[in-house]
Image (cartoon, rainbow, N blue to C red; front, side, top):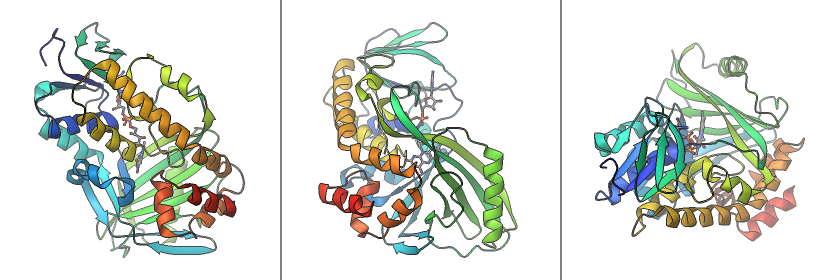
Length: 366
Ligand SMILES: Cc1cc2nc3c(=O)[nH]c(=O)nc-3n(C[C@H](O)[C@H](O)[C@H](O)COP(=O)(O)OP(=O)(O)OC[C@H]3O[C@@H](n4cnc5c(N)ncnc54)[C@H](O)[C@@H]3O)c2cc1C
């Protein structure tokens, strides 16, 4: 993208949604000039994104397929009174694979790392060193910023990648092991067998506060793997984060923060599953939508994505009410009851596509 010329597309933030948007353009619209700007020294942060096969529309799979590091044909859940195997496929993408794909598909002049952005406007971004880069459209994908307009609980996560001395023997992921101590909110452990010896074990807890003591949760994970008799093992990697899970709020006011006419993707655009806090399926959808646009204009992209996210916010009110329950006392029981229902209903729940009948059925169990 030539400096000073108004052409192509600027993407602010090289995290999950910014990278997927850039990859979609590079794959489907290689003629469109793009510039992906990220303040970190690498793309995608340090995390593992997991999703069910049914979270992604068939027509959008071309975008995720090349990124998948692990795929399993099903998964388990375990609650105090009930455990179950599901045959829904489950996949994980690692941030290093997202980063490698971005570097492979984008030419060096199409991205900048280590570059902090001060402001994003409809058709330009302003860097903290004072440089202004102009284009036909700019997209703000800089992750969560000001969430004060939303009423939120938090899903806190610490994951440890263990390499055990002996084979752990787990063939399919345990997506939810809620037989562990609740610890103040709905809490569960997940286990992703990455190979015979290696496993990503994660501790997830829902809470009204965003505070996370990573070391204390890490120690809880060590105790868990010892209890499962997988230890001894070495921790080769750790990831952690705190994800917003809304119970309500003024979404229009939230969307106006940081520029009422700026196109926003990812967390900044309110595009995530209200219950899981996961953003990958929405980011895949919006990246695919972006690549389908006949032309790129800042105002038109704002209108497109604002209408999309506002529609989803309205459709997803049910999940925000469900969150209120997860953050209260009956949370684990609510999730356990959900996991006794039909497999396809659970798939739609995690894909945020529950039908009216699903919502009635889930509500009836509440
Ligand atoms: C440990 C962990 C595990 C997770 N697991 C899952 C999962 O299994 N499935 C799932 O779907 N979701 C998962 N999530 C949630 C998901 O990662 C986030 O919701 C998602 O990353 C949000 O995407 P985003 O593009 O909006 O923001 P981000 O991915 O946070 O990207 C924002 C990017 O913008 C950059 N940036 C910010 N400010 C500036 C600036 N001023 N100038 C330049 N660059 C800037 C940041 O450095 C960052 O790279 C997980 C999150 C964490 C932390």
